Length: 407
Image (tube, rainbow, N blue to C red; front, side, top):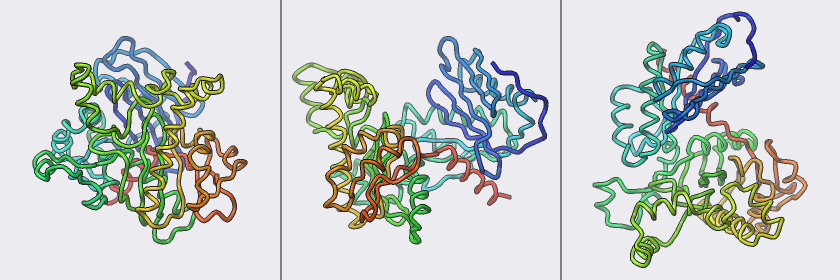
C-alpha cells in the first residue's frame, strides 16, 4: 500500500463500471476525457478473500475486503473514493455501465431508466452469465451515486445495423419471431472504438470501411461499411465465429447430436466442452494463452503449432469472406490482447494476402507490439493497422454525450 498525499482540489469525474459475475472493474475519467485519472477493481466477489485494488496516479491501494455481492463491492469502492487520502476530492457526475446484451431493443447507448433496467432483465436468457451481474452493478451503483445520470453502453448495439439477411439464421422463421433467435454479435464497443479511430488515422470522410479483428481469449471480426457494422462473426452467443482461447467457434451442429448419441454426453457437458475446453486449449492441450502455445510450439509441440495454425487460418478465412461482403476496404484492423501484442499471430494471418491487397511488412509488424501502427508495406492497397482498443474511454464518451444532451 502506498500512502496518498493530502486533499486535492475538487474534480468532476465520469465513472465507468464493468461488472462481471465475480468482479467489478472501475475507471475514472475527467470530464474533458483527456486521460484516465484512476482505475481499479474488486475481484473474487462472493468468493473467499475478495480484494479491492485502486490506483490514482502514483498512489495505489490493495486491501482485502468483505464483498458477498456487487452492492458490498461497490460500497467498499465508494468508501475509498470518498476518503480524501485516496479519492483526491473527486465528485462523480455520471456513471457509464458496460452491458453485454441489449438484444434488438437498443441500437445505441441510452440513459438508464426503470424501463431500461426491465429490458436488460428480459435479456437474461440470452446472456445468463453477463446481463445479471451487469444489472446488479447498475442497481448497486444507483444506491451510491443516486443523483447523477447512469448510462448503459451495449456490446450488441454496434451490430444492430446488420441487414436482416446477415443476422438471420436459415432456420424456421417463427423461431426468430417467437424466440428472437438471430445473430446479435458482441465486442461491439471495441469494434466501434477502433473503427472510429481508423477513420481518424486514414482520413475516411464517409466513415471507415474495412474489417476489425478483436482477437484475445474471446475473438470476433466485424465487417464495417462507412462506419456501420454489416456483419460479425459472433452470433446468438459469443460461441459462434473463429476459434478462441477455450471456445470452439464454428462447428457442424450435428457434432452435438453425435456426441450425445455416441458418447452419452448431456447437453450441459457438451456445452462445457464447446465453451471451456475447445479453441487453443482444446487443440493444443497446453493452454488457452497464445504465448504459452508459442513457447510450446518452439519446443516442438505439434499440437500447439497446429492450434495456432487453425486460429490463424479461420481468422484469415473470415477476412477473405468479409472483403467479399464489403467489395472494398480501407484497412484490416487488429485489436485486443492478441491483436495488439501478437506479432507472430498477425504475421500468420496476413502473410500471403498480397493478392487481396494486404502487402505484409515484417519489420513494421514487429515494431507494432502494444502500440498503434501499420503492419503493411508502404503503398499497400489495403492497410493493416494495429489499434489498441479503449472500451472504457468510449463508454465515458457516450456517457458524457448523453449527459450533455440531458442538460
